[in-house]
Length: 518
Image 1 (cartoon, one colour):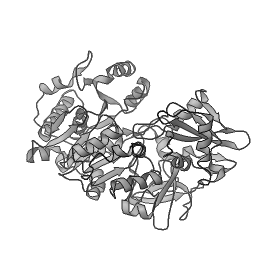
Image 2 (cartoon, rainbow, N blue to C red; image 1 turned 30 degrees about the vertical axis):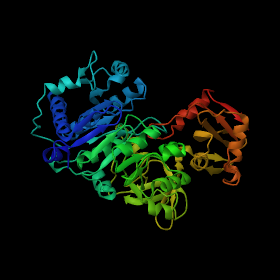
Image 3 (cartoon, rainbow, N blue to C red; image 1 turned 180 degrees about the vertical axis):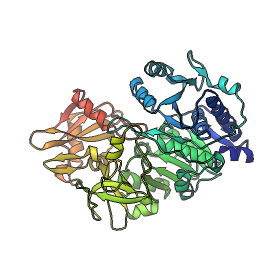
Image 4 (cartoon, one colour; image 1 turned 30 degrees about the horizontal axis):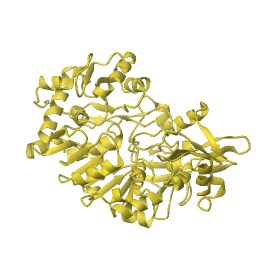
């Protein structure tokens, strides 16, 4: 379905609530405004197959842009507003964007971008006015909300987060259907699984330029629920929103859980979370102890899935299954899991290798990058694709992720997976955030290094570094324990919680960190 169905049945129902600004959209408003934007874009010569991009923090207008594209056969590309002008310009040029819609807070950045990408046909500021841009409200005010006679289904074209290199554009084929006959993978896989419907109140604080927040938000609106969005994640504020809006469904990443668990006990006990039926988490593997403590606190409502922007496959696991198989990211819900060794051969149960999903046909290609598309495809099985994760299957078919292939540390010829060490340190009371990387070592090839962002008020000292390392004794094999701890003021993460280790390695190359303990 799509929001127009619900606008006809219940026009006054709230479709979107913005926690921080109090701004709302009814279904009637969402339908009217998305129709007007679709018509305006068509009047500017932007049509099916063209790309519309937005650079914005979380605003209700972003969902209007999303639905305008999806109801007019266009691609919609959300761009990380934390990127530099050059990085944004690369994405806009790569996706051949014809329109740029930007929030007022990012106008200066957008002006820098336009100097690098001068040919954008449409330039609109979403929430205000700015020289050189049309005001979104003015555009809507002078445009009819009579639906276009032709409403082919569009799609999102999103970019990988670039944690291991330059972002890759994931461009799916456009379906040959009209909006009234829209059917989508998100609803087919997750709608029934998690019980999304007209009674859903869905909370998300992650940025809508990423796949899960945008697609899940779109699914909620297609099914007639209410999307409760926040500008950014703040631990206690999230709990307050869950209570205030009687949230039934929510979306998280493991770093959010860590922040929530580190709130004082009296703060965590202050809020009524009894309305919460499903708390979905993804984006990165969750440390076992973190998830176990969240289930103890929130009850058996934590549902996990593993997927990628490429949508080449999905695993899912219920809280009950996870408690029986701690650490798993689930069984295949879409595609068949294949674990492959360095020689390209499929590995048996229990052995660790590159995770591939087999589908009837390859479901994606990287835009303008045949080489990277082929690199993600098994050389002998063209319907097997990988996004570079490493893991293994158990005898019951549950998948366990070990790390990204690009992050594996090889020390003395032995593979060490940083995620295991990071998980062991995640809940240390003196640590706010932690990353583990390999650094060059003359004898071993690489040495294991822990990079720690101390918790607020914690002094980074050699004694603390020694205590952190000592906390791993008996919990990890000695060869996995870091040889050194470095303290930094921050770690590079995407807003969805993924660690950008490429940036961290660059910091080391530039000499901007200092080791405090051996």
